[in-house]
Image (cartoon, rainbow, N blue to C red; front, side):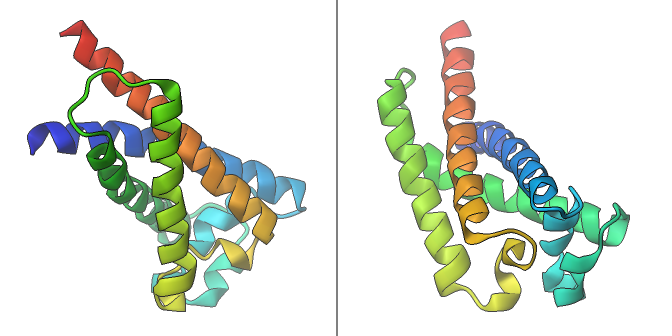
Length: 155
């Protein structure tokens, strides 16, 4: 179990950071503040007004980032379970596992959970930007998976 936790922390952290950066860039491109999508993720605590907060602050930005990060690590557990204990996998296999993971995550996030528990990004960016963000999250899982595989080989 410890190995799974470590692998999920690595791949989930990479996915979290890359998808947060993508959201910031996509928000800026849409004329919004770079932190608005992250702030919007705190809507489970602060309500829909969280997505309108344009500046970084602890109640919105920190809570939003920590929520997103925890979610990315949670989904990384599924990704790492799909990968199993195989140390070396082809990039195509990693991409398939990452795509499966983010497909499940997006369906859960936007079709199954109550609105209050969605990522909240829809308050700030377009559906296309949300899809792009999930694709970047998958890329982050692949990169994280490659990092995990490299760590295993180095042992």
